[in-house]
Length: 492
Image (cartoon, rainbow, N blue to C red; front, side, top):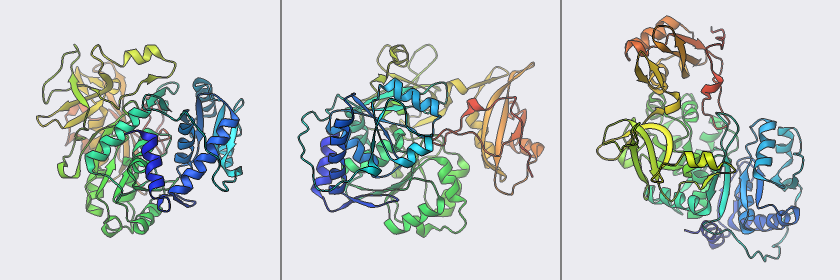
């Protein structure tokens, strides 16, 4: 699959069909292409840097901007507008940008224009007629399609370089895995500056001729209304969104009856969320796995292969293995680092050759930094992040195991566990919980709840309440923002 060719072909094959529906309008195929052609001319006039910044809300404007940049053979650098101002300026410098495609409200949100960047303001443009098109250097398979900057859960954001071939491969892998095509409609609210939103919510439907329904802000009631109106066959979200939907009081199974599958990614799916969503809507969430560096999807529990506490088998063309501390390949049901090869694996980190070299082993396998195991049938289970592993009394303990138990408690909305130094055991677990609305907090009762379900040495030494757990812009909990010095919020 040639990414740009596939997108243009599908949009122009059905030019009057609605390809994208967002908060502002319904985009026909021809609408997206006309805007893209006008934008390409504006970008060409604004600057000549090989990479173009794009800072837009989740909408049809984003794919139009991507098509425009790729038509010129340039690389898209999606700007995460939820980053700090200093991080946004760092991204612009690191990527060598001279042009930013955006709209006025986005600039207002980040505190004004970025010095040194020419602005292509879509809200100030007119898209009358079809402009003369004579762009002769469109994006090719091996060309750099996007540089996606990580959310900076540890240090400065890193630019992950994905080629057109990387994204096209992942689109094709996802398409074939669940037989996704022109008759499907996908619904989601994921940011398009994130790999999940970019590939699965945006490029997958565009390249396969499916329809996409976007909303820029996660409002549970609005998502249900959109599902009732547009009858989506696919829904993609992160666990916190599924959690909010299951807690919605006036929703029912009929609201999501059109879905063929509902996919969760971005972070582990808690058992309480999976069970609660299934009980409310009669739908089993299909958990997936991947990283920005893998374009992103590598594993996916298909509806017909649904298993809990695993993220499914590897998608087609991905060679996955589990590796021990000595670098040896481990057999089934043994815990080690998840490593993989495939056409969807990134080209590297922008301007960071040493860090790029460090994440590939001698055989060319990408080192994910995640601990996991493969069962006899090739289904992958993720244990946790290697860097987050606790060593309590000489035993390896992953925060996720403790968090799964905490999240089962009726008072707990979400939780996060980190390590705390201890003179006797070396390290003990420190838990932070976010309570459900109106819930009361009893630390000793919560510890007793844990003690009934996990080994005693894994029970948190201390449990603290936070009004909100710190999250990055994609909703993932930022454990580095938590520390033993953090005070507990008052709880009712």
